[in-house]
Image (cartoon, rainbow, N blue to C red; front, side, top):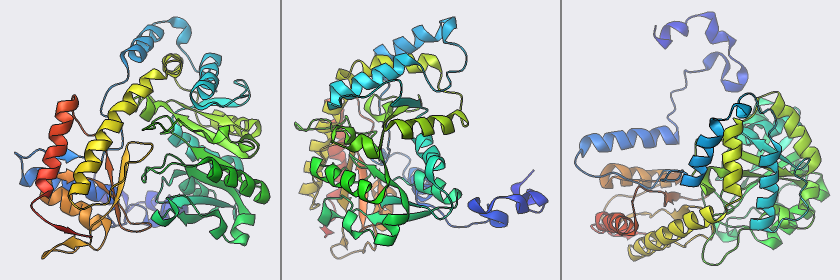
Length: 417
């Protein structure tokens, strides 16, 4: 039966206001990622014999390490690993605490009270507002950024205040620009470094300022760190929790999806302030029954072998070098990030003697439809596009071929910046 018929029944009037109420499903706006999806489909149809180079994908292009896969297979066959895991197993928590110490130099984390597993970072971000937000409370988010925690803040009757990440401020939020009345009503501050989509990294000085600001206004900091171990060119992995006082004001969220090629395995952890971890654990216990124990044990194997991530980071670093060089030869002002697999560049204003680009979305659509190169536009704070170095390529020679093809396709026009 078609959805139109159901929109004529009482079901249509029963939807919660938070998702649109009686107008749910009738919105005709096409959202960014749906536009990208449609443009890719159209380009493939119009140019069936041309390779579509996907630089928009925000997930790894390879499978998890063979050792992790083998650990899963072994643990999945053991009867003691069946059943619900609830809030996690000690083996995973202990591996997570050791990982924070060995990779990020975070000392003094109590695995039993200051770490809890999550079924990936997205559910953790979705549940965190339930620990703190009452109607009228504020969550401070950064834009561009990942909106999930803000979405659930609004679901609970809270408000979201957005701070722009600008090139002029090295894509770090200007905490001094937060109005006093907002800061006093705020319960949560969301940060994400290395950052999606900008690729920017935080500094000790910035995180120290965050701790001082959070204490002044009694705000809980949630640092989302799925790319924290993916760093390049001598920059060491850096954790918010390594900064003095950080554990007094908040928590850090880690995920194995990006750093271990474990997208889809749905495993991560929340670490830091024991009261926040306890509250999150209670809310989580009312939302899920824990990740499959065999996955937790396979993940513990990964956390105990950080050299897996180091090898992955070497590949992304190499690809960044190639892509940055190619774009800069075409007139872009691309700068290699110190972390993450994202490259964030300002969109050109147009093509010399040709079309204009009024936004990052305009340029992104041009790339997909006319050059069969997929990217993700971001127009929240300036006109930018995000490229990802997780494109499909087996080996270094194939990587060079893909980048050379990108450069070839874009060389027949002269961009104006």
